[in-house]
Image (cartoon, rainbow, N blue to C red):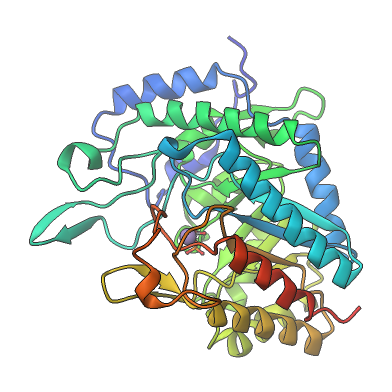
Length: 391
Ligand code: PEP
Ligand code: MN
């Protein structure tokens, strides 16, 4: 069998892969991986290169990236209608942003593969009972039972099939849409990595753009090593603990050729800290000559637990973090390159503000993980961000 990865021994396997699920049976995992290795990739190198070229425009200040979708996709909610609603919302937001900024939008869904979640703790206790934590539908189930929470490698095949279906809906929508997700499960990612016959280079075949999460961006870790081995456009989430030295080392490791569009930094500092923490990162990376794309994720630094146990975010904090991000770039003369949001076209009640209070959260809280902006909130955010451009 020639699957395109034959002959490659990527060095990431020798390193620590943080957040790797405790798969109960490696032989079953190997069988699923073998099945995926023999399956077609979901995206092709030419499409990935096209996204790199579009992102090069962002790196050079001539375009803006809008990236959005669920925190965690759910296998039991897969439907063409829901996918189309999210795509329509992304399109509406991009129309608002493009008319205000006069910049072309690069629209990328957090979609067709966003099924694995990094977690801060391996277990969760409810009413005195402790079970393994939910790690995304790619790994286990969200229901609070022992059976649901047991990692099941067969889920990787279901994720592949669901992602293929989603990509088909994306392709049928006509307008150009790209798919992205966190490349957390390296067994899955490697199984879908293919060598391009024309260029001889390796590409992740699970999505156009993959990102490294804030919890797995260690320079000596397996994720950075795997990402260094692929040629897709990639991103790294940078949280408040990021030092400028780490950011510079990530550039050297992940974009040694300084190729515009190759590397995006998605910063998620929190509304209260972005103005303090971002300037030094941007200054030092810019001074190094690295052409990275700077994107604001105003969600992950602004999460708190509401009474009743709901994880939520305040709409005003989300807006405030984007405003801080734009101010920092304005002051430094650099390009505020994009917005990364957790949102859905469904009418959910997960974030508070713009019409929803803490008392509304229980009404339609559907997220399997983090709270998303609903369509009204996301569109309102787009209008407010539109007012932050100074073309
Ligand atoms: C996420 O994007 O859902 C996420 C977990 O983000 P981060 O890695 O920035 O915490
Ligand atoms: Mn999230």
